[in-house]
Image (cartoon, rainbow, N blue to C red; front, side, top):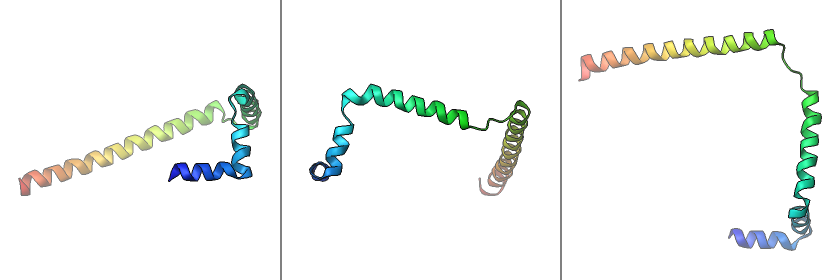
Length: 87
């Protein structure tokens, strides 16, 4: 079914235009264009300061430790209940 869909897609103008733009000869030019666009977009990025980065990192680590402790406590409780009452 996919081959029928693909061949039907090639027959229309959009399919032909797609194949025309996907030629291997255009690949290096497309890669260069892509990298230039990436460079332009990276200049627009609002990068956090060092202080903000450290603060956000510590928040993530703190929350991760809190969630790990909470889940570890639940695991301990359920394990204790299972061994005491079921097993």
